[in-house]
Image (tube, rainbow, N blue to C red; front, top):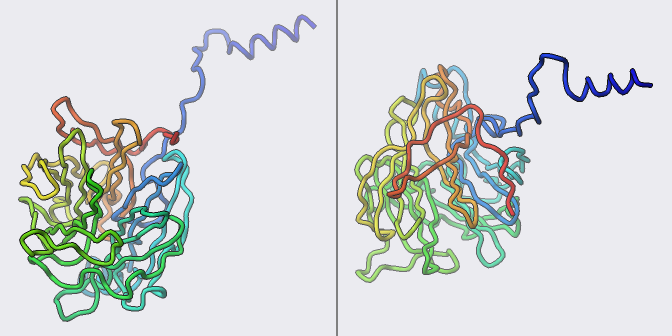
Amino acid sequence: MKKLYWLAGLLALGRPGTAQTGPPAPPTSGNPVLPGWYADPEAAIFGQLYWIYPTFSAVVGDTYPANEAVGSRKAYAQQVFLDAFSSPDLVTWTKHPHVLDTASVHWARRAVWAPAIVAKGGQYFLFFGANDIQNDRQRGGIGVARADNPAGPFRDYLGHPLVDKFYNGAQPIDQFVFRDVNGKYYLVYGGWQHCNIAQLKDDFTGFVPFADGTTFRAITPPGYVEGPVMFRRQGKYYFMWSEGDWTGPSYAVAYAVGTSPFGPFRREGKVLQQDAAIGTGAGHHSVLQVPGTDDWYLVYHRRPPGDAEGNHRVVCIDRMEFDAAGHIRPVRMTTQGVAPRPLR
């Protein structure tokens, strides 16, 4: 009997001369956090769950990027739906397939991109780009879909695009919805190196003109290309965007700071750039703030190192921090991702 107790004690303490490692480290999310090829992640919090709504990053094989025009057309033709993912802790993610499909949006036929989502009045409104229009004569632009659940199914809300023209030179893609402290909602959007802001009606069916009679106001900062994001922290308005070539090493996230959603914005610099050892083409992001805290996360896409296929994009999460003066510190890309962070 004494021998059994001695063996039990030995197992509890570890072998003589062996250092004790303590409890195992908690798991992290790892990067990428989602399986498969996805890009342009829109992150949100609804109730006790984190959500990510990305673009499906269709891959067309050898035709891209060897023949970019042909490859792009084939990839865009496959981008006819949106998936969503939910998590209680940023580590374990559940896929919700086809929360939106062009079958429920009669005017959309391809290139469904870069969703943005807001909850209002017990319903969920999903803003999306479709068709990659190249001029005002083509059908497409920014649409809105609605559902009673963040997992969908989302149905076309308007029956037509919300924005279907090039105002101030901005291609109607890459939409972001910003809610200001006064309760007003703004659509911030634009590709082709131009960005607009417009005040949404309360029911999201259209826009409220500004006092000068205009509807779309240009707020394009130096270096802007696409992918706008806006948030407010400690009385300052942070305007973020992606710049450079999305398929190349110059793709990055930069930001500016202003005193209102309309600026003027003072460019501060880049906060996310590629690290050839970890990932390239890092950009087109969103941000998460844990409610009731000053803890922030950057949710973005990047390509695996050494991978030249433009659409081999994956979704990643890393911490985003501020210094004492309110500047965003450069975000360090990681392969381990983030630690579990359940919502309270």
